[in-house]
Length: 317
Ligand code: CP
Image (tube, protein in one colour):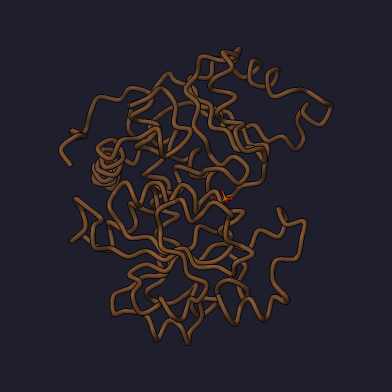
């Protein structure tokens, strides 16, 4: 595996399955009497967050602590970034404090790559979401959750159909999921209004649909995405009500899903917009499983990047 995890493209299919296998092994170990493993004792992990986060920041912190690493949490709000301190000076300050891994979330696409390529720091860099570009650990935890719910696809996702519905244009989750799901063999359908479909999406080698109702009966997984109003400078649909009517995951649509199909959402959810409360809280909603799996998957990523002894052999799939 590379020194950094910046994009799903950094992983081979075998390495991606290796992370999922490691997360599974870690789940068995940390389900036992002690949740804490000594693996990363003496190492320091820095959460460097220039953008808000609940799930990703807390789950990386929890993952690092469960592996016995020391954790430093940095949030741009309330830091010297507000006094004009640059990414370089911030990163070097953290490096001087002994960071072995830096987990970065930043509003600019490419920020994680910049940090990794810069030579400013020697720590492993993990992309925790950069602008509209990628969010690789979200895709890994999503794949882990799909594997947990569809054990028949454990060694290959060939035959699994995943619909990603909503604001594809602004979604780093969609980009990382497309890359990973295709690598694992799934069939991916991107569903959105034409205005929220990226111009280049036709080149992603996925199916594109503008009608959720048309494709819904074929989907094993319905992954609703958040409408990212904070990244929108234009109006992309006439009204929230109309968007919800055409693309919202709701009780009526739940009743038209395939038996056994699941509902996913990376969070945070806009209840009543892209997902109705009765769908978010439905029995086949795995939203909270995704959150729990985020800790395990991020433990696996830290474990592999920071040199834990192999728990499982990648490369067989
Ligand atoms: N899914 C996700 O990235 O959530 P947060 O923004 O809360 O980290």
